Length: 235
Image 1 (tube, one colour):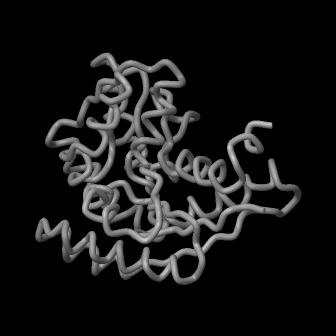
Image 2 (cartoon, rainbow, N blue to C red):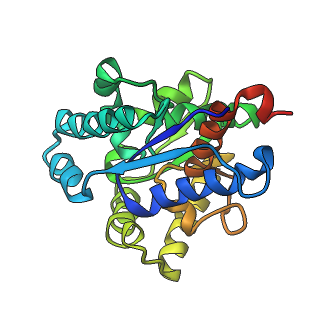
């Protein structure tokens, strides 16, 4: 028996990548075409953004809890959220949640420590990179974080919100991410966190100046391991 994974989604492209990863990689342990039961719920991204633009993280938490309640009633055993930005509200969510959660930044920090990295560049929306979501979890693992400059932050956020979440992937936007990551490498980073779940759609180890920590796929794999049991996942 495997556990039922509940996905509290926010933006479509990142949630879809997370969902696909669980479905496809589940076969490694469970057999051809097999994966754990998964249920995904999402409110309109516009509802989330209305709260985020107003810095209303309690409003974000209420949306997340509404999804959590629906997923619990459906039969999910635990929850994940393939959206880094709204993890800023997770501290408000967990005490009231009907189900336990995996934290995306904790998953990434664990993997960064496992690989022996020391200093990680952070990419993501302007709300995410200005927050303590990643620095706090990375520091708990002895890892340092380097944020983008203000100009880099604004341009990366524009690309994410105007292009990536809409399924638009432009070569010049790939080049922008590569330039930012190259600057982080020159500043002493030994890897980069892809801290928006859409970034892996255009950046990965094959075209990044630094090794990448793909938050989307790492969260999906952590959910798989929990759903099928750690011993079974590492068999």
